[in-house]
Length: 315
Image (cartoon, rainbow, N blue to C red; front, side, top):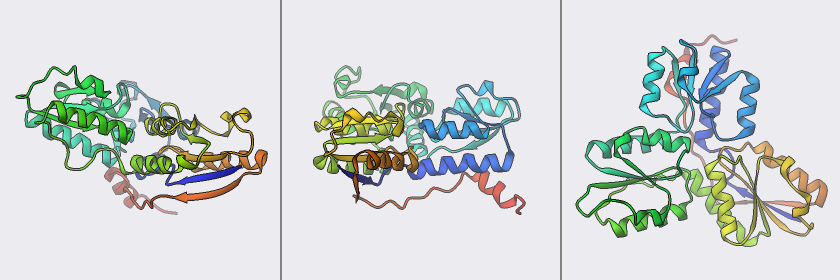
């Protein structure tokens, strides 16, 4: 058996920032610290912080008045911030800057009178937060076929935005269909799909040509991890989205395959290495790392924590 270890894989800059934000907040303020929705969509990360005293909530109203509340990497609607202020919560914003970029674009288009087509998945935390920036301006579009049913005409002012964790191919199909049907539609000057999502998809796309099986490390509610598994399956490669080595089935392998291993942008590296070790132990697998692109993006801590960290006592 041969393992091709895809690089880049795993944590992106936004996830690193969100995790470091929660770690720092726990160190500075103690626990419990409340987090609105999962800090990132990964079971291992969430379980670790629960053990350390973080409390994940789906309603701001469930947070005691005056407590510390951290907004997750996926971003929140202005209404959530308003309720947090009303409850005198000490809010810390760990929204990924690339999601914030989409929020600012949404506000700009809404103010200029555009109807906004948001390409994304219904119910995803990021989509809820983005549509919350201007609820009356948005229409959610999930498929290219849906474009044909949209109730707009050639005189309507239209714009499109995308969820940052989509399949590049799927988003392109929908955008192209929107432009065909509505030539007047405008979009952001720079692609909304995040660099890390694109890089991980590119790596899987290239390495799948040499693969018999693809293992994607990530949780089922991780949009970008789901897209990695779908990409492989679209190329006729057996692909499994798993949270860790404990979910691997020995029957998936005969022992002479080439296995590509990658990880979604919220999956820790240790779960990747656990899977590598599982295959090494059982199938005497060799490992080759294949680097498709280098990543050097870094996002600083939120300004609320940068100021607190600067004044915190040391030693």
